[in-house]
Each structure stands twice: as structure tokens, then as C-alpha cells.
Length: 200
Length: 197
Image (cartoon, rainbow over all chains, first blue to last red; front, side, top):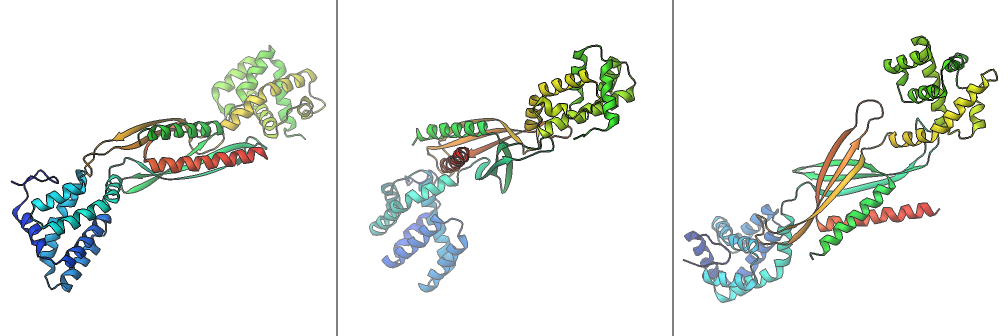
């Protein structure tokens, strides 16, 4: 039973085989494949592009696309698990060696992990659940010149529009603040920011 | 400038039947809110205190309502301005009393009008909280601070109906909060610039 850092589950046999099969690629091929993989990890929405690049790679290197895709699917398990568990590059390398990848390729992959890790973890944080996330704020302020009750007045008002993401749609919230309320709001937000900064 | 008709001035003189100055004051206060002169309870109260008929009470309330709203609209603040509304033939003591009442109340009425004017929902309260996210399904260990903000808004319709309150809760990441404070700071700078002019 393999003791791996990136997962606690027993890996199915084909996954271990797939990792060992990576050894069959040449240095150059492995480097290109690693690049394609990391490109996908950095832009997880580009699945079409990822599959297309794999198909191209398969064509250029005289192999069938289907098995290559299956292979990459197994390989992806490692970075996904490593990201979830905040693994270091050393831990990733140890896991690759345990899975049977040769020293050179394991070093290259874990080096790339070290390079891309900050961006990948920021991406993971960005994907974390946010409830009613504030996405945009628009404001205007002006002076009320007159109303139906008062012919001449000079009242300052501030209007805010907050755009909130609710699931897949956004909701606009409109509100008006008086000047004292605005100053209070700004003060409170600065206090919140100071509180957040304590944790950095 | 006369913005009341002769009939309305005549109706105003019904106030002479009031038993005391306080009754006059009360009638004036009752007649100010929008739609007051259509409300049965107000009409009856006025009719009883002056011992006049309902229709006369309605005329009086309407007349006073028109006068007081014009005074607030045009922001007439000096006694001379208000006295000049009345015709020469108007009862002198009553004229002075009405002027006094109008002057006493116009500041309050003006402020009320300002706070009840049409507007977007007004912010009535806000609360914030800073949380620390320690884990999620994409990262089993993390330390990401996040801010939760709750704002209570009240929409007061000017025309009829009661105020409706709504609450909105939202989450802000640190970047969002920074950007928001930037934006608010810009507003503050602009306000300061405008105030200086």
C-alpha cells in the first residue's frame, strides 16, 4: 500500500500504471506534456483547449488521443490533491517517486509545481464559496435643487448602487445616504479593513 | 401674490369661531399633512371644535393646507412676506395669529419635507463582521479573511402606504473592500472640494 501525500484513498491500479507509463516519454515530450497540464491547471475553464492540445500532441508524437487523455486524467489527480492539501514541491516529488516516475521527470514536475503554486493556490481561494459576493459599486452624488414641496433647496445626497452576485445572476441594490451616514459608512469600512489587515 | 381665492380666505375666517388660540393651532397642525382634509376624523374634529358644518370644515382645512404648503414651498420666512398674502379686508388679529403659527411651524415642516422627499431606499443601519475562512472544498487548510456586511434599507413611499424595510447581506474579499474604500475616499475628496467652493 502506497503512502501518498496527495491522497488517503487507495489509488486504482490503472492510475499507478499510468504514472509509470509517463517514464516512456522522452525528455522533450514530458516537458511539453507538463506544460500543457499546467496551462490547464492555471486556466481550469479552458477544458476544450486542453483536450485539443492533447489531441495535437498525440498526433505529433504518433500515439492515439484516447489513451493519452485517459493518462492525463490520472495524472491530474496528483496536482488536484496536492493543491487541496497545500503540499510542498518536495512532497509532490516524493509522491511521484513513490508512484514510479523516474528521478528526472519527478524533479521537473515538482519544480514546475514550485513555480506555479502561488498562482494555483490563489485560484483555489478565488473558487471558494462566497455568499452574496459584492462585485461592483457605482455611486453618484448631487444636490437636490427643488421638490414638489420646496421650491428651492440645496440638499446633498449620495446614491450608491451595489452589484451583488447571487448564484448565477447579479442583483442591483440601490440606496441613498445622507452625508453623515456616508462618513459613518466610510469610517466603519476602514475599521473593517484594519481588522482584516491584522490577519495578514 | 394671492394664491388663495376669496372663498378660501372667507373659509379661513371661520377660525374666528375658535374658542381659544390653541384650538386654532391644533387645526393648523391637523390640516398640514397630505390628504388631511379628506380624512373623516379630522373633518369631524374641526367641525366640532368650531361648531360649523362638515362642508365648512373641509373648506377651512383645504384653505389652510394650501396656505401652509405655499409658505413652505416658497420658503417665506419673514412676517412681512406672510402678512402680504392676506387681503386688506382680512381680520387683523386672525391674520397675525395665522402668520405667527405659520412662522413657528415652517422650519419643522420644511425639514420634514426634506426628509420625506422621494428618494431611493434610505440606509438606516449597517453592520459588519470580519471572518476567517479556515477550510473549503478546494483547500483543506487556508487562512483567508473575509468581510460580511449587512445593510438595512428603508423605502418610505411618499404617497401612501407604510415604510417597507429590506435587509441585504453581502460578502467582500479583501481586494473588494480595498477597492470600495478607494472609491469612498474619492467621494470624500470630491465632497471636500465641493464644500470648499
